[in-house]
Length: 219
Image 1 (cartoon, rainbow, N blue to C red):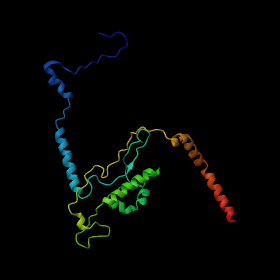
Image 2 (tube, rainbow, N blue to C red):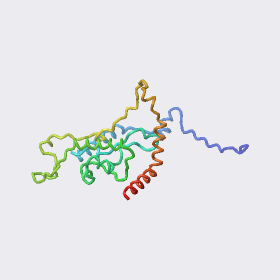
Image 3 (cartoon, rainbow, N blue to C red):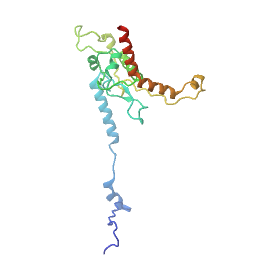
Image 4 (cartoon, rainbow, N blue to C red):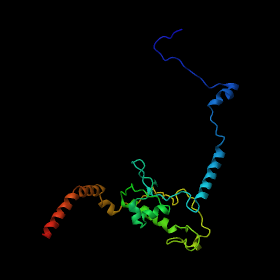
């Protein structure tokens, strides 16, 4: 028997079955999660085994910087980055070759776009260095090198088991209401940005003019 008109070919497939057959027929499409508790225990055991393998180093691995994610949607947040820049290490007075040997991640490709992020990561490095304990590689007096922590301070050292070694600071997004001051009324965000753009635009011309003037003065 045909169908009138150019319609969709009927292909209804009701998989659900009512009554006592539901348990038998519909069980194929059910997803169980009976191993949830077992998997949780396995993950915990794996974390403990990894920490024991890395002891006395931090269980989280290398120290990583705090960075702002890209795009306007996420750039107000903070997360861990790949590694510290060469400028950050230089500001913290840590040699690049030494940084890799004392658990500090280095990323030679990342650049510092502002002073605030540079100083924040420099402070992070300084805090890490203030708490760092370096174990001698070999036993005996000859195995102790310059910069190693004295053996008297290495007794009963607790391992750092935090996920981030030094926690990522949580910025306070809430700004409390306050009275508008006289300085706030006098300042103009538009004028400040306008002046910054103008200075940037004519910076090359100003430098060129100053260089020419200094050249004439020398003659």
